[in-house]
Image 1 (cartoon, rainbow, N blue to C red):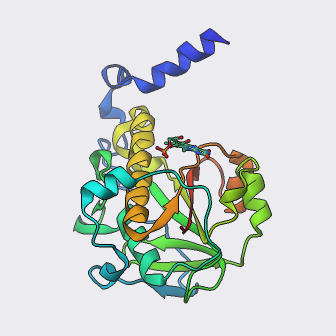
Image 2 (image 1 turned 180 degrees about the vertical axis):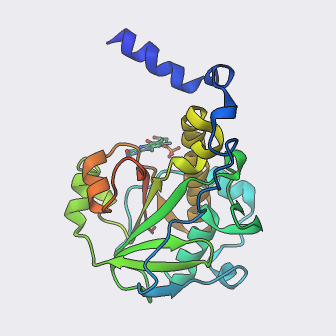
Length: 251
Ligand SMILES: Cc1cc2nc3c(=O)[nH]c(=O)nc-3n(C[C@H](O)[C@H](O)[C@H](O)COP(=O)(O)O)c2cc1C
């Protein structure tokens, strides 16, 4: 083991930077306008409206919260059966849906985020969802729609990008979360990166719980090839890059 490397990286988990950093240097403190809360999209791109709450309520079982919490489990085998648009709408609302927009540069969502900075974008590789053609999409939380970004990506590319974990390409839809770090850095500067990582956990936990409540299965994927996944989504790998992945399928 390279103990120096390990000890150095442990520092990432601490909140010591907060004491060292001069917060008057942040872009927010210097009066630079807040970054957009949603990545712009091509207005010509076809968009798919999603079901809003409570329209998707029928996708959620009557199971009580305790049963859902106990039943949450990583699932790596899925049936070759489609998800409904209602189920997909519930999953997207549960993971990044906006509850309230108190100001154009602030959104309060179904997951918590330090300083409500919400630095994530949600991309979907759709394979088998009713009323949604297979392809690459991005969730637009501000208007709760899906923007179509491109044609179907072959499952083999996703499997390769996820280090040969076959089930990542053998599901109905793969969630790929990217991070735009500046949304948090604007306020917290170099103190941002630990809290962004914590924020990502909330998003995936809500996906797990929403899947469990809908009879669907998912599995968090933290082991992937950064370059392959960023290239698949046409990301620059610096201002935006993949941070977390989760396949979803019917159990
Ligand atoms: C941050 C994170 C990354 C993970 N990455 C992977 C992964 O790449 N492949 C995988 O099969 N499971 C992955 N998992 C799932 C864990 O293996 C799983 O949560 C653990 O075995 C406990 O099982 P449970 O979720 O069913 O309780 C990951 C889980 C987390 C929280």
